[in-house]
Length: 167
Ligand code: S3P
Image (cartoon, rainbow, N blue to C red):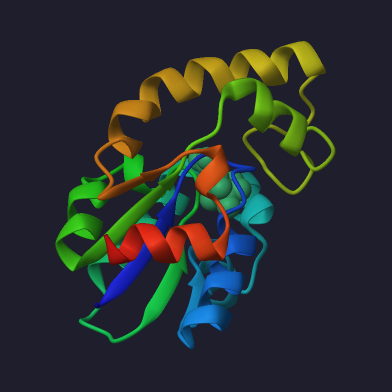
């Protein structure tokens, strides 16, 4: 096993699951947003505000391009990362990708309290937020579905993911 990548929309629970999975499997873990924040010395929300989304997507691309074969690491990816610059196929070449599938309504419930740290959904009303999630998901879903493993909402525990990885 080389890399395990968790992919999926904002609010799917990628970072939380990455930490739990890593502790169960004795792997290390990383979160691409956190890596970018460390490198730039700025929060993702500030990067969007000051430099713009295209700059952020270039940083994500660079991060993916710089991944080198590595043992036993779980990486939680930013929600948009797989959907730009052919990153999804690069991730699939480097390791196992796991899509944490959730419906737009579930994602809406999960992110609506924490929109401020997420520049793409900051300052949206509930109605605008649900519509944003639905339309963005329509565009991104076919990319997410290229994952090696699709974990539905009942499979998103460390134990169940480990079982899926062993199949
Ligand atoms: C984004 C998701 C965020 C972060 C940035 C853009 C997106 O990551 O990378 O705000 O395009 O969906 P999370 O999925 O970890 O919230």
